Length: 385
Image 1 (cartoon, helix red, strand yellow):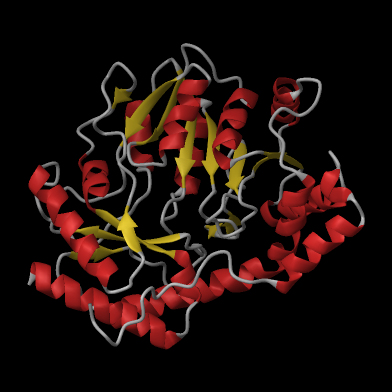
Image 2 (spheres, helix red, strand yellow; image 1 turned 45 degrees about the vertical axis):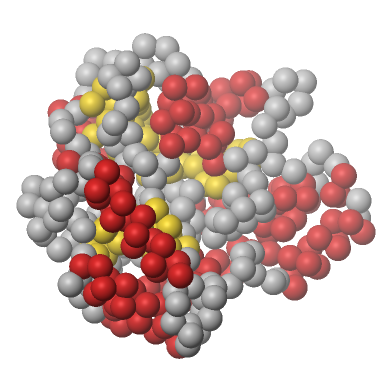
């Protein structure tokens, strides 16, 4: 381990916040912390509606449950198909199965040439048409790792074929896609307030929609004499004061990503996310910052490659850098559980080679980011030069 690097480099999460402390004290003082409904839940719904530009907001117990409720609100069920990227959060695949539907896997955006020095962790909208079948009922689209899906194209293709869209913005609250808020493009948008998210209450989620029929079906399904999948008033109380700081924090994280990637330069063996240009209508939010490890290695499904990533992560974590592996993806799932469109080469590369930097380090001082870049250059050079 380099003696000049602190261990760990990233601050803990959530960060200390006096406004959250005061909100907790206020919820205790007025007794709302022990009630089914209270002023904080109402205010949280208003803030979410303003952020996304939605008429309806339904709070719930998690982002994963929000996806399931959105699908149920869209009447997705047995014998239906839902298209999603073959590299995605595992809970999304399970949510499709939970409503009785069949997942259909499409690839990520990418080049057929594995040596191309760019990569996107986004569903490829151009593959949607070839994935449709008479059973296709919905598309589940996730903005992952700061990579934004081409929502204008997704909406164009889905609209032509009468397919509903669930837009997963759990990792990207406050981001914009082509000038519109993430979560505002689909029939439903979903958000998460899980323990490490950019807006955090330990647990929780929300569905946003402009469709009255979708909201009504969600209400009917969740009503078991009371809301069966609630977000508590106490969780809402700690989320409300975070909204006023989200836009500034997102800008700080984006600026930090630009600085960090510039400080890293071209890293041997690591392909970074391509960022939108300054002033672009796409403004990502960074829950995780990704790199693709050894993206030009044709043997990414092998045990040798798995050991390569393990060695890289052990070395970089020894430097105090909070990097970890990405999702396992679904490309290896059997056809008993899903329908697969094509060979999914980009999703396989992402599952085998994604490494992720946790977002708290992006709120660190510039000198800390420079040290992260130094550690990345050191380890990448040692393993791949």
